[in-house]
Length: 115
Length: 114
Image 1 (cartoon, rainbow over the protein chains, first blue to last red):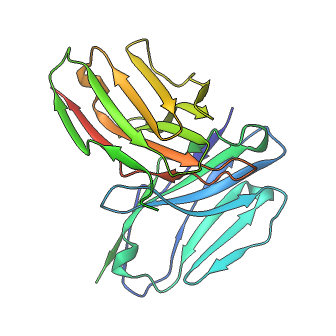
Image 2 (image 1 turned 180 degrees about the vertical axis):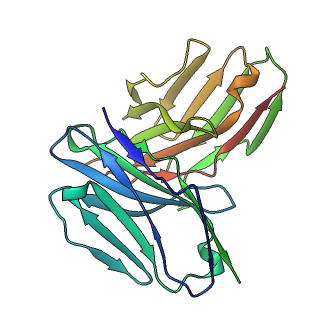
C-alpha cells in the first residue's frame, strides 16, 4: 500500500519569505515516482515536477526547489521569496514505476502568501 | 493546445437524476484518467483508460458510476442515479505513453447533488 502525508494543512507567510512544504511518503516499491502539483484558486491542477526514486539529486527551477531524501522518505518543496501568486493548494503524489499511472495524492497544503 | 477540456464546469442536480460529465483529452495523449476530489477523501483515482480501453476501474465507488471512452478524443463519466454524497469536483486528466507519467488535468467539474 502507498501513502502520502502532508502534515501541514495550512501555511501562511508574508510575501518574500521562504516557505517549505513537507511531504512524507510510504511505499513498499523499490522504484517509484514522486510528484508535486499546484492547485490555484481557479481549481485546475498544474504539474510542477516528477522525480524518480533512483535519482536523489535535488532540483531547482527558478524560485522553486525540491529536496528528495530517500533515507527519510521525504520530498519537500521550497519556494524562495514567495509571491502572492504562489497562493494555492500544493499536492505531493506518489506512483510506483510498475504502475506509473496510478497516483496516490497527499491531502494537500493550503499556502497563503500575504502581501 | 487548449489542454484537457471538461464540461460542464458546474453541475447542480437533484438526487436520483442522471449526471454525465464530459472530457476531451489533449490530442495525442493515450492515457485518460478520472479523479474525484472531496474534502474528506482528497483526490482519488476512479478509473483510467489506455488507448480508449479501461485499464483499472477499481476506484469506481459503486455500480452507479460508469465511464466510457468511445474514441481518443472523448470520454464520459456517468452517475446514475446520483446521490448527495456524490457531490465533489471531478477531474479528468490525460498523459502521453512511452514512459511519460506527467498527467495534465482539466479544470474540473464541480458537481452538487441536492
